[in-house]
Length: 185
Image (cartoon, rainbow, N blue to C red; front, side, top):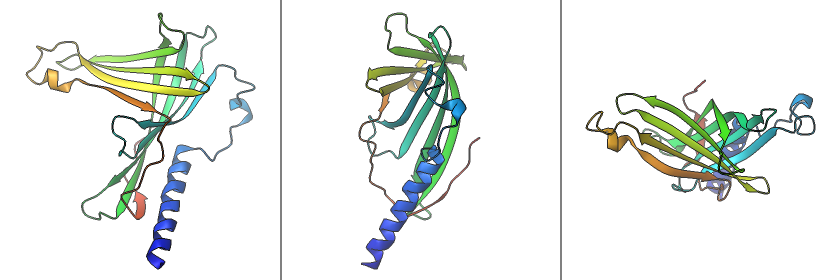
């Protein structure tokens, strides 16, 4: 009974820490209020569809430009990982990054972002955000080698597509405890 209570407390702390890291408990300031910023897009939860056991989540806040054809987005990621050294403890890590998206010319509800090419393989990092309606979004990521002959490993560097959305975001935990992992700024 005491172990079950300890697991419940640890789970609550993990979820609480993740929510704090993700910023879902913070109230938006007046300047960020949707009523005063009609070009604001918030995608609160994205989880990996391809790997349903992953404890990796993202949230996104975007501002559309005045023409409505470009969005500047800030992503916040939170990861829970285990360590072989202490297998009953999850390490929580957060990361924030920015991307710019342009409205797809062929679809009024699809936004595209491409970064690169990078390296001898000319790797493009391609991300699509799809507004599926009712405040629901899907994110698709992939990496494409534009120079497959650049090195023997170029084809192996291609990935995707990987899909993230707001469905099935509740995931079982492989740990009883949580502690800070590496911090990424």
